[in-house]
Length: 313
Figure 1: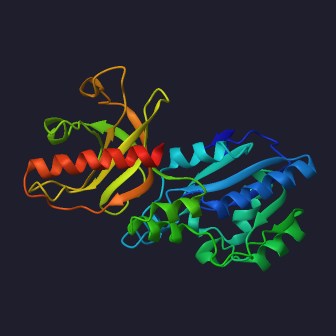
Figure 2 (figure 1 turned 180 degrees about the vertical axis):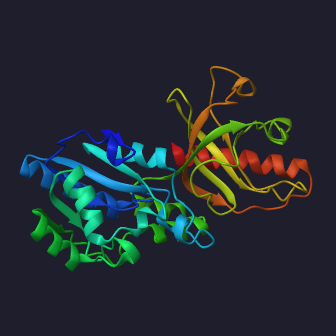
Figure 3 (figure 1 turned 90 degrees about the vertical axis):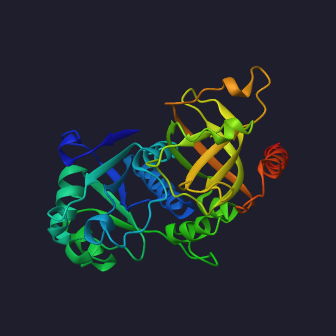
């Protein structure tokens, strides 16, 4: 999959293509249906399949104080898009200046002059151009004037429409099972493993601590069964702790994963510091509890490992 980070990076005379646009935060099942239709239309027309997205999210530019938390970072989103078989993704830098374009200016510049679109795939609620003044009727009219078809995605038939909002709601409740149903896969975070307070190591459970600037929504505090994938692509079963750990005073909120079942070497020797890892949340085991004494905490951690092993198989 080709990735372009500006209009200038798209090769001259590119196209024809079938294109769609959106933020695609989380790349949930609704997004996947849209991109699947883009690929199908492109195949039927002998064209290339392209998605247009924005960085940063427009809400972070227009209303940063109330912008929704991002489910996944741009690199993870692009990697997920590549797995869906698209030919290309155009990532346009979103600025206040860019947002001043009228609907026609935007469509003509991006879809027609740059991408050579023969068809544009959109939902019924599509909005674009300055002040979101462009809608589905606008797109259909522009297509008739500028020479491309408009294909409207049918997103009916679900009790609730797949959405990034639904994913955020589930994660903030710690319901990673529901989040996975909407996403079509388990929720993940990615980031560098950094040094922590080494309390886990002192208790016999050394953990990989994610950097505070790790990408992805942190689910509700608690302990989760999941997986950790290291820089080399090895995927390890893990018990994952999210929160400030109420047993210890003054600990900031963090995500730490204890990798289990590594018989080939002592787990204490398992060094992930400095690696960029992916942490995958499969099932919430329990909420955070303050334990009276280290022994009670250690006993519970053994139970968490046993429960994680049972869930992950």
